[in-house]
Length: 315
Image (cartoon, rainbow, N blue to C red):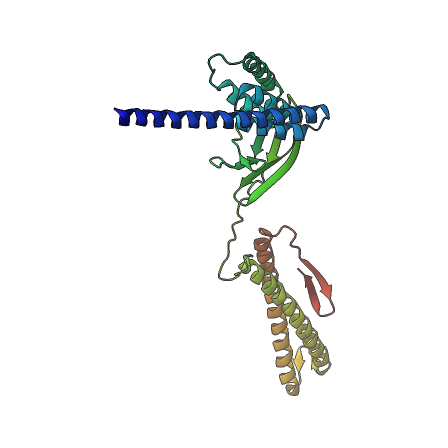
């Protein structure tokens, strides 16, 4: 019986000690939180809002109660962190209601709900519109390095932001500034993919031009120039010999000693005639080649002009 009484007394003593220590620890934390709240109030009065936000946040991390959360949200709004304030107010709304909680908690909940309604109207947004993408292609869209769909506006804090769109190797970015209550549309046009140029090559011209046309053009006109030159020279030589032979001929009868000269004159005349025929064929061939080449090159020109040796050409 005495043993059981001793055990009960020991247990009671331990529970009392733990409870007393917890109460003491809770009192210390409350004192710290109250000091931080007072510090936040002072910083707010001095318009040092960033320092006030830090003090209120530290107090809220200790207490996790509505009266600290509402002050954090108010300072977040003050420094332009509307999205963070929205999240803080959502957390405030979800805090459990404690039995017999002080009236300050109820007021904080009411103020938080009102501030949340105001923020819904004040938070700006950015709508990204992407053009130039091929059907079936989905560009990567980020705002401040955070992925976002381009199909709907994204809520952001007021101020400067960077919109970036990437599709394959094509990437563009744009800096944009938005104010409260503003929904700004950012249009970004991607470069249209140029259709690949088909290069048709032949064995005659691996470089992709009309090889046959070039060969016919240069070969034909070259042959024409040579033919005219040969025809002209041999024609002059033939006429010179005929003129010389006429001095030894009477009534179309010439001295037997001039027979070889007569044959030579005839040969030169035949050569001249054949040369001019070849020249004519060369001109026709060159024109055909020029027409073939001009299909791939609109500025192809050819000029045939007389020259000292017969004909000269520029292609």
